Amino acid sequence: MRFDRIYIELSDICALSCSFCPHSEYKSRRGVMSVELFEEILRQITIPKRLTKLVYLHILGDPLAVKNLDVYLGLLSRYGLVVDLVTSGKFLDSWDWDMLLKPPVHQIAFSLSAFWDAPQRFDANHLERILEFCAYHREIGSEVFVHLRVQDKDRWHLEQSIIAKTIAESRESKWLDSDDVWARIDYKVFCTITRHHRWREDSKLGIESRDRLFCYGATRQLGILSNGVVVPCCMDCFGEIGLGDLHTQSLGEILDSALYRDIVAGFRQGVAYHPKCQRCDYVRNLARNARI
Image (cartoon, rainbow, N blue to C red; front, side, top):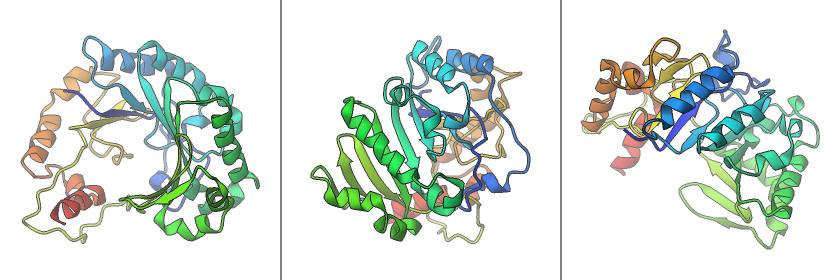
């Protein structure tokens, strides 16, 4: 078994409560994953067999809100892994930018929609600081990818913002048409418009009986919550499909469990085994896209 990526949630803390995020519905808190558990997870996904080379440090929560993020990044380097960070950017100035723009960081993505959802929770010059970060990226010749992400529902905000003005004025930038509308702002710096995602499942979402349901969850990606519970994917932010607990089981034992094998076998046959997967907006959209 090898995964394209494994999500390891350092913390479910982000200091925001965005309307489009399930975080606002989550009443309890898992807290910060201990350094000891994090290192044990890295050991298990690299020794004796490397299960992935790419780690995402979130499911819920903002990794830049974790006070000793540098320690976790150091461990990722030690185990030869690269990492993608997804953040609102609210805590950007808490860190040395050089640390965020060198290995093991492979990519850092900023959710601009988090800012437009509740701008009063951010510094007034938030967008300017992100652009300054992008300028520093160019100044030091960083090879880290930087993505400025905007949900399609916030396209109007983007068009009125300093980000759009920067794209329009930059010789390096150009809007391109693709599945995601995006612009190249500078070398390895992009602005992307993505589809607004429905986190909560809806049994009324249209699906046809002939559709083969499939997902990358459990097959090409895996999630580990900050409390050590393993889940099939990053969508299971509440741990509703708990495959096992790394405090009491090894990852190998969890990946050999009946539930894990049933989920994988189901998707290979075009069937969503678990009720949560059957209702998942992401699974249903994969099926609809395959139908087109």
